[in-house]
Amino acid sequence: MAPSEASTLAPRTANFDPVAKGYRTIERLVYGSMLEEARFSLLERWANARRLLLLGDGDGRCLARVLKIAPGASIVSVDASAAMLRLAASRLTAQERERVEFVCADARTFVLEKGDFDGIGTLFFLDCFSDDEVRLLAARLRAALRPGGLLLYADFELAGAGLSRLWKRVLIGVMYAFFRVIARLRTTALPNAVNALEAEGFVETERRIWWGGFVRASAFRWEGTAAGRG
Ligand SMILES: C[S@@+](CC[C@H](N)C(=O)[O-])C[C@H]1O[C@@H](n2cnc3c(N)ncnc32)[C@H](O)[C@@H]1O
Image 1: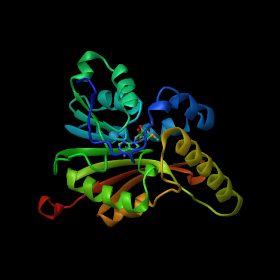
Image 2 (image 1 turned 45 degrees about the vertical axis):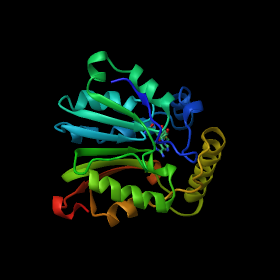
Image 3 (image 1 turned 90 degrees about the vertical axis):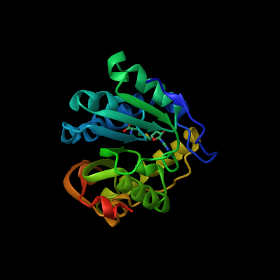
Image 4 (image 1 turned 180 degrees about the vertical axis):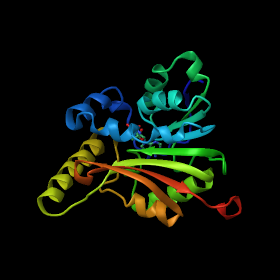
């Protein structure tokens, strides 16, 4: 399906349109292939999924890969940036596009059906939010996942101590300053997304790290029952 412009974007929603086309190049210049490796590292776990939700899906590199890895899956790809969604759609064949519902909306507020998804992806996405917002999002994601479903997560972390922590802090500060100017992102510090997920009953089943823990990719299973979904 073609990406649609929805009206669920609040004035406070970040706008990644200006950076959409250059996003991949900037990422490569700063991090080489590291973020790509983290983004793709656990996608194979969704090989048998039937229905997947990608939040803050970005320019579609992940989407294109997931469509191949999970040939039986239909995918809902949500992003607040219409430009990102157009770019994502342009990577796909007409046949692949039939399996994707593109939603241009704010992930904090768009209507999510309960228990609908076998898997949810938040790849370099939860860092766009404050601790409070991430807690609310984590509760929404738990409700949207079927029992036994798998959430794949990747993001930056302030790991380590001393000099090792200092350069990570500086790099994260520069990233937030850049996206504040370019994308009107209001978040200024990494939220504790893993705590928020674990507080909702997500259990980590796998983890990979890069650059001494600066980037982490994790799989989180939600083993709750439909009755306990809330
Ligand atoms: C840092 S980029 C990451 C994109 C992609 N997941 C990746 O791994 O490259 C964050 C993405 O989240 C989207 N985004 C930011 N705030 C959002 C919100 N409130 N609702 C939906 N999407 C949002 C941005 O438009 C952007 O595409």
